[in-house]
Structures are given as C-alpha cells and as structure tokens.
Length: 185
Image 1: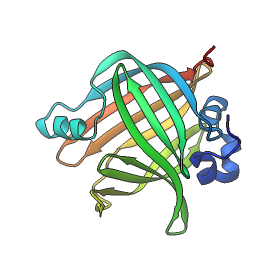
Image 2: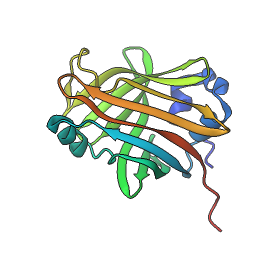
Image 3: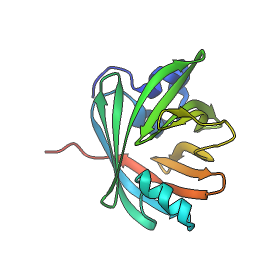
C-alpha cells in the first residue's frame, strides 16, 4: 500500500489515529486496495426517488447483496468503485479546505458533496456541509443525505448510508460490512 495519506487521513489529521481499527485500516494510505462483504439496500418507492436513484446510479434493493469496494489513487484524490452485486457506483473523493474547514469532497455524476469527518463515540460520522448539483450550490435546507457513518462490528468495517431529499423522501439506504480482500496470487 502507498505511504501517501488518504483523503480521510488529510481531513482528520491527528484524530485519524483514534478511529476503530477496521475503519482506520479501510482508509489508510492511497495505494490501491479492495474490500469485500455484503449489504442490505433499500430504495424509495416514489417516481421521483426512483428517477434520482437511477440518475445517480445508486444500487438496486436487496438483502445480503455481495459488495466489492475498490479504492484507487487518482491525482490528489481517490476513485471509489463500489460494486453492489454487479451494479457499479463510481465516485471521486478528495480532501480540500473550504471556508477554513478541512472537508472530504465526493463527486457522484452531477452531484458533489462536501462533508466533515467527525469521530463520535467510535463512529466516523460524515456530516454534510455543502452540496452542488450541475455546479450550482444547493440551499443548506436541501440535504442530499440524512445520515452516514462508519464503524466496526465483529472485527469488520461497517457502513450505514441513508440518502434523502425534500419532497422525494428516501432515495436510497444501504448498510453492510466489508473485510479486506486477500491479495491476488
């Protein structure tokens, strides 16, 4: 694994060392790495929720869906490739200081979200600060997700993400666990 710091390490600074072991291992270094596990996925049922989920390429609903997450260095950031049972969700993440605060930026297609990384009681919470759609800053009252956090469970890296929007309601929610994939022979 590359010794260069990951975007998470850059944003969190010294607090990165206090993350639960599986979360710290998942976000350590910028070298390519791959993690595997399973997830439970829910999607909103309304037409607008289905359209938003399709535009953003969010995964289809299911239980115990096999998941592979591959993180690869890209410029000053990382490309994240999440494969939910054959449904691939790709994004780019990078660290940047915005209005004096170190934030994690992530771009999914036409949407870019800036989040603070907050360690609270053993959970890494991703707290949205700003979001843009098609390059336009979205109003603060228009959240692009309700809650997202990472933690540990049974020695695994665990994630829980819920994405909602006003009027639309639930767009997608997915939660699951990952473990580092063995190195290829």
